[in-house]
Length: 218
Ligand SMILES: [Zn+2]
Image (tube, rainbow, N blue to C red):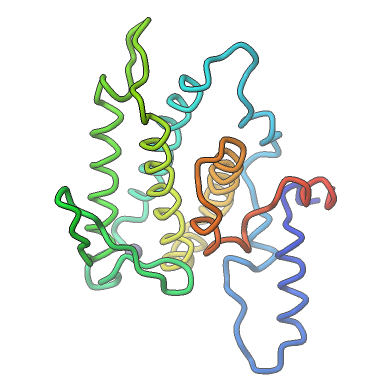
């Protein structure tokens, strides 16, 4: 039994089953791949704010943890993501991500450059004591939530690019259970704490399980 199986994936599989224009199903939505996880842990217990814990502290510690996991995961695939394999930073539906520089200019760049900018930007934020304070008694800055939202958007795009452009390498390395687990954990965390806009989630909506659907499938 696949605990995190999506009703939507099932529905999509059924639709493709009767599709007669030979359109191939997106490999990451194939049921045997999409339901693989590295743990049966209760994700809802993992994402909820522990009783008595400060919300900003909870967001901060999770932001650091997600960054470490996703940075490590994308490093494992970095040899496959080069300016020649990925001349644009693209995601599901061939959506193209543009990097906005310090002057607000939008730069079209290769995927490795885009995600290099993204990871460096996040790393800089996380190590900035004024933004992510680590000392006892220090307070989080005004607008902290907006920075956290920006980090999660970049982390989501990192996973979206991997699903869209590097899924065959992920499968070959047998990393899809890790990727699916990371993705479920990230999207549920973002839903629970309102960190991403619905339109940001839309490109990978087929992989996202609304909480009520989880329960119904179970
Ligand atoms: Zn790539």
